[in-house]
Image (cartoon, rainbow, N blue to C red; front, top):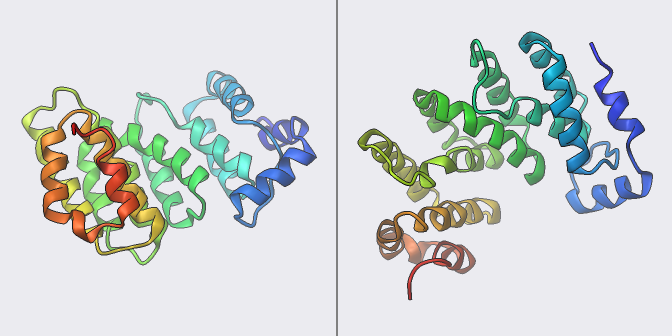
Length: 225
């Protein structure tokens, strides 16, 4: 197995690591490696490793609890198709969700999760259980991982049903005034407004008063008028 964490550490910058620690605030080790560099390394590793090796490496990098290690773990599993079977990748990504504690790592892992959900939409059943979690980052992940459902240009009836299901989760989140939850609602509605502004207008007419003002503004950013 390649020494992925060692490779990332050798590319790090101590000053940048200190700046990242102050910015992200989560108490973990920062190496000071820029995201484009991590992208380049993970692309190379994906070509070099079998799927089983990639899953083991992703698990080890996540367990390292370094910022760049967790970003790299997510990027190792971020692709539209994982052959021959993506169940192991989905299981690993889902197992990370309860340990989310900062937006950057959570977002990268959620992008990896988006690919797996689009590939097997029945996994929304698992995600729905996250919406009642006591862990804010888990609740937030339910919306971030389902962003592809508001970006579909020509959704089929089944996809529209799934979208309405997710909007139901967003409705349930409206009374939760945690900044990150409200931001996630606004983000989801903002992206949906580019495809279906009427549905977002309807949501805001029904539930906008319960949202934080900044979340309403975010949701309505691209609405006409």
